Image (tube, rainbow, N blue to C red; front, side):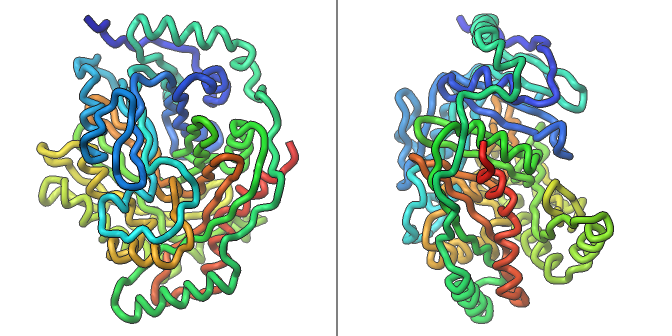
Length: 456
């Protein structure tokens, strides 16, 4: 008989770095990081390791795992895996009481929609990788409390892992070794290549194929050393509320996302699309000027509204009729390096649908495809030389009660066998200007490149 899940207090810390450093070498270690104390908007950190099972999805949509359900479609297999955990959990306001944690790559969308898949792989990561976790360490930064969610047996194990790494807990900057790039970041596209693809997008828009397309370019560099050190550098340079670190074998995802994709709790659904970006100014006066320029931009507001309409449609596929609302349209949110226009779309999940059905219905997020979504994805597949891998996919969790929170994996680095990949992109509409859009793709990740390039 399985022991009941218990929720016990744990020492609180301002950041999750020390606790995760104590766990990161365990199998399946995962960190969903709110970026606190520096990042606005984040509340919870979720840390875990040693999943009961791991389910991977390959590029063809086939599922793989030692004891995971592999004869089902990807989201059906994930739902079946989740159902292995008992649902009689304690009543709690905590976001996660056991369930799935992992990522769903942008490329998983090819398994859901008629996308040719002509772009070559950028990295050999699975199209999705989720673990089934029966315990978690959760930090609540609003209440400045931390909790260990586990059975008594698991709690004893976890505390022994943490105690065995007391030095790492007490020295957040401790790490196994340095990190360094062994070559500069190289763009997959030249400026002229990007502008040629920009012109192709404009032709598609004029022809009526679509009215917005998100076009991205990839940058790659060789590296050596400790990716946890790299993640901490990125976090220091640009703390964001939907960050995450996942590492396994010679592969890892280092995400500094400011964008929530889908949140679901007690049947209430929220998505927060970002469209419209300006860099932060060097002085308060310049910063205010950039804020005003962004909020007054007809082009950026039009991009945002287009994606809001797309997401209203996506949520409408699984939400109760008449419940989809837009409580915030084109609100200004500021982060360490950029200003964004952020909208909020909400709804009530229909009783016959699960959070994983919601994720499948809206995946990948419209803010990083364009609209109409399927045609935009087909054009992206044609114009971008490489597949996107985890970039523009999602990181997050789905718990046993039907709670879910996922990000849009922008500002995200993918590590694969000694190479690190970064992407910068943006939404293109009829009145976009090629040179400005090219510069914006660089502005969005320039600070990430600089942080990774600094000597250890």
